[in-house]
Length: 363
Ligand code: FES
Image 1 (cartoon, rainbow, N blue to C red):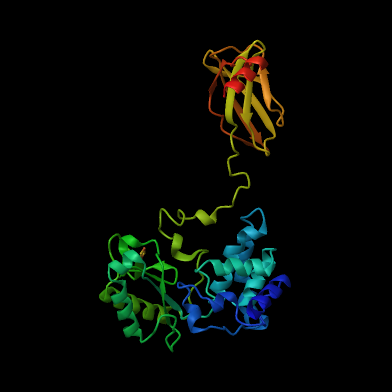
Image 2: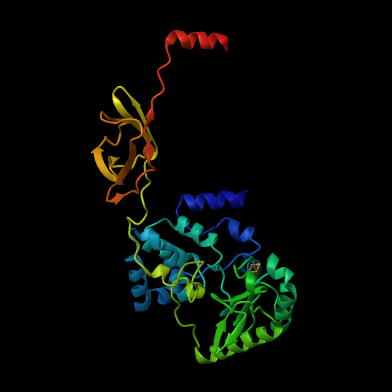
C-alpha cells in the first residue's frame, strides 16, 4: 500500500523520484520486460551525469528535426525518447524528464509512455540486446532449444548481461516474424542470419545454433569496428527495408499534415416526398462547418441548397418521388466524400389520431 501511495504522490507532484519504494513497473515487471528482473530497483544517474550525452550538437539537431515534423511538440515524444535512449543506451528517469520538457508534456505522462512500449529500456543492457521470441510459433519451432543454446554459449540467464558488457539476453513475445520462427532481434534489427556483413532475416530462414554463432561473430566484429554504436534513425532498423508493418520505409520521416484525416461524411440521408416537395433528413457531425445538398439532374449532380450545419431537415420544393439526392459536408479546410445517394420515396401518410387510438386499443 505504501508503494502505491508513494507512486501516486509522486505522479501528483509531477516528479519521477519514487522515494517510497520501487515503481509499480519495477515491482511487477511484465514477462517481456525481463531486463527489469535482474535489477529490481535501478540506480538512477543524476542529470549532471547524463547531460553530456544529451546536450550535444548532434542530439540538438536530431530533436529540432523531429519537432519540426509535428503540429504539436508532444507528437514527437516517442521519437525524442528514442533519441535519448540512443544517446545514453537506456532511459534513466532524468532522460525521461528531459524528453518531457522538450515535448511540453508532464514527466509522469512521458514516463507512462516509455513504460508502455517494450522498445524502451529502463535499465542498462549490453551493447547487443538479444531478444528471443518464445511465443507460440517460435515455441513450436524450437525457440526453447535455441534460447538454451544461447544461454549456454554466453553463460547468461535471461535478463543478465555478460561481464564484458556486450550481450544481454531477454525472452520476448511475438516479434511479428512468425514466418521465420524461431526469430530474434539484435537491438532493433531482425536477425536470423548474416549475409554480406549484414544482419538479415530472409523469408523462411529461421534461427539455428549455426546461424546464432554467425550472428555472435558479427557482433564481436562490429564491436571492433565501431567502439560505439553509430546513431540510429528514429525507430531504428524496424522500418529499414520493410514494406509493411510497422510502417512503410520512411513513414516516420514525413512531416505530418494536420489536415490529413478525412472528415466524416453525412450519414443516413433520407428523402421523403409529400405535398411540400422532398424533405431530407440526415445524421451530421458536430465538426461540420458547411453542408451542401445535391440532386441528380439528368446525370449530373447539381447543388439545390445549403442547409445550416445545425439544421435537421431541408426541403426541396421541386422534389418528387424517384429523385436522387446526396449531401456533402465540409469540416474546416477539409471536404468529406459525398454521402450515400438517397432515392426520394413517398412519405407515409400521417396517421389519423382516431385511427391511432383504435389501433392502440386493439393492441
Ligand atoms: S511467435 Fe515468434 S515471431 Fe511470432
